[in-house]
Image 1 (cartoon, rainbow over the protein chains, first blue to last red):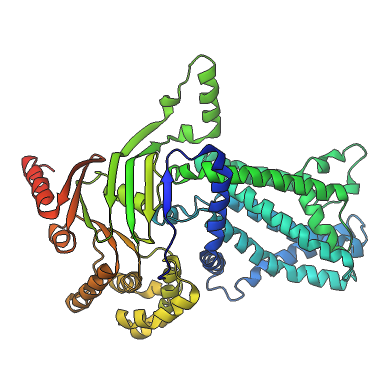
Image 2 (image 1 turned 180 degrees about the horizontal axis):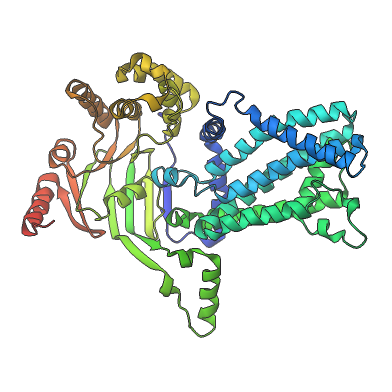
Amino acid sequence: MPESSPPVAHSSAAPAGNVLGAGARECMAGLAQWRIAHLDGVAVLRRRYARSRLGQFWLTLSTGASIAALGAVWTLLWKQPAAEIFPYIAVSLVLWNFINAVITEGANVFVNHAHALQHQGMAVSTWVYALLYRCVLVLAHDAVIVVAVIAVFGIGLHAQTLLFIPAFALALVAGFCAAYLLGMLCTRYRDMILFTATAMQLLFYITPVLWKRDFLPEGFDWITQVNPLATFLSILREPLLGRAPALEAWGLSALCTALLLLVTLYAAGRVRRRLVYWI
Amino acid sequence: MARIVLDNVGVEFPVYSPRSRSLRAALATQLGGTLGGLLTRSENLVTVRALHELSLTLEEGERLALIGANGAGKTTLLRVLAGVYPPVHGSVRIEGKVAAFTDITLGMDLEDSGWDNIIYRCVFLGMDFGQARALAPEIAAFTELGDYLDVPVRTYSQGMLLRLAFAVATAIHPDILVMDEMIAVGDARFAERAGARVDELFDRSKILVMASHNPAILKRYCRNALWLDHGRVRALGPMADVLDQYEASLRAQPQG
């Protein structure tokens, strides 16, 4: 590594106007450490399934079993058409698992890497990228189920399927921001870790994952409209089911992402300086 | 080009009680403050001052020893230099690539083989995968671990693990090297080879800052010394002078 590195300056009085710039630099510096994010992301999954014969395919297996059971209940008990409810539940549950993991594990992202943060001067966002990468790897394992269900129930590929790409890009940016902010908040206020886990359980019930929006009685539509998780879920899900997401869902997701990004850059520029002292 | 400039640096650690760690308590404190000071901020927040008004300039070629009792702020200063602690007061300017040896096993995975861990450590120290793979055979040869490099590191003895960590740590080319205690390894024969390897590493490094309680090691590797006492600079100057003053103060207070 003979290349020279630029000088690093830390001052207790960060220039006020430049906070967003400093935040952007911190987030880019974390991206430059993608090798560490890759090693850590893979290592955590490997450790979780160490010495089991099926290894990480337990991920696919357990998600698949849940979807089969839930789909059976919905078709047999509630008489929903299988061709409609199976793909819906499969896609929703797989995507929800991703969203849920980013947020609940985001709460712990800095607490879990306390040792590294105390021993190596590096961009703290590295660990957020590592978390995001790990969640994407898990999603890739679950994607097998989505592909199978889409094929079996004859949904197939449409032009609208391509809309998943911008939706996923938006969700990744928002997920990075949410995990970064929540990670900081939870490092300072440890009660928030437990609060986050509880809140996500409740959000699971009021987000249309296992039920559809049109199951809601008249006048309760607002439940899904004020819930940003429902909005993100819909822009991710609809393309995979061969439909274009509603325009308002796109707008709301983009607005949420932009706001989150602004707050995150501010936090990364200013609050990040205190983070290591909270560990 | 390597240079370190600390200007009036202060570091304080907040000590949060479980009470003030909760958001509810923080809100109550904030509101209490505006509602007539029933609860004050300072009620929950205790701060420990680790470094105080520390100014220091280290130029290329510096070999600095940090001495002082436990809790004097040596490790905190090393972590400021490593970029771990942004200073609470004052400013820090560091020119050059810093390698901090405060934990030379950071990033290792005990479930993986020695070979894998060589790569992990190299990446943590700032190399890309190509550089790490190119350096791995030389590092592996130095460890003398042979076939053990193919089995998970959790099967290693403590000495073997240290040898592996040492071999990687001493293979790098930093501008600034920050060490908490001398990294020492192995049996007598290995120690001799390790010594030569450390000498080479120090020769490559443009600035060395080392904290240690071992005067012999400090005298061997360092030119100047900084004596820290309760987070303040007590003395800074040539190794022998500062060490004499420090040891004289220890004799004056035999309980230290």
